[in-house]
Amino acid sequence: RKEVEQDPGPFNVPEGATVAFNCTYSNSASQSFFWYRQDCRKEPKLLMSVYSSGNEDGRFTAQLNRASQYISLLIRDSKLSDSATYLCVVNELRAGGYNKLIFGAGTRLAVHP
Amino acid sequence: DTAVSQTPKYLVTQMGNDKSIKCEQNLGHDTMYWYKQDSKKFLKIMFSYNNKELIINETVPNRFSPKSPDKAHLNLHINSLELGDSAVYFCASSQGGSWGTTEAFFGQGTRLTVV
Image (cartoon, rainbow over all chains, first blue to last red; front, side):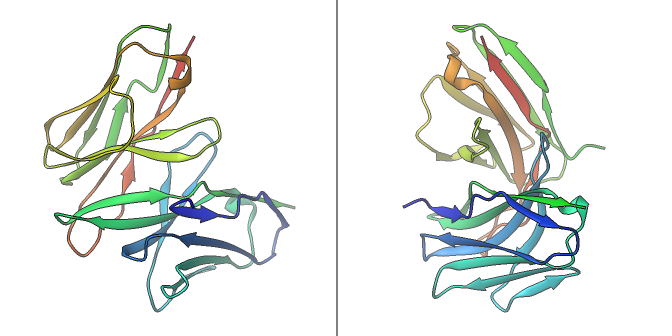
C-alpha cells in the first residue's frame, strides 16, 4: 500500500462547480497534513494546512479524519485559475524528532469555461 | 529575494557524466530536502538533512551523494548519470520541530535530461 494515496484525476469541471479530492495515508502515527498546489512546470506551493477540526480558507475547505486516516479538500465555485495538480502531503515524525514530508501522486484539476 | 534557489534550472548531459545541482535557502530553516519528480509527476523524497546532518536517505542509488556544507546549503552530486535519472529535481526547506513541520518551501526545480 502506498504511504499516501490520492484520486489520480483528471477532474474536468466547469467554472462555478464544486469539486472534492480525497486522500488516504497509511501511517497512523502521522503528525501533520497539508494540501499543496503545483502548476504545470512549477514548484509545489502550500495551499493550506489541514487541522483535526477542519479548516476553511475562502473557497477551500480541508477536512481530516484521523480514525479513517483520510484527508479531503473541497473547492467551491471553481475558477479557471484553480486548474493545477493538488498534492496531499503527510508529515511523519521520525525518531529523534525529525520530520519526513511524504507527497501523494497528486490529483489533476482542469476547470473549463 | 528568492527563498530557496537552486542551480542550474536546466541541465542536459550525456550518460556517464558526473554533475552537481546546488541549493541554497535564506529562510533560516534547519531542514532541507531533495525530491525527485519523474515523468509520471510523482514527487518522491530522496534525502533530508537537519542542521547539516543526514536524517533521511531513501532507497537511492549510491551514485547520488548529497552534501551539506552548512544548514543553508544542500547540494546534490550525481555520478555516472543514467537515462533513468532524467527528471525534475526539487530542493526544499522547512523548519522542523517535534510538533511537526511548518510549511516546506521549494526551489524552482532543476530539469535534468540525460541523453
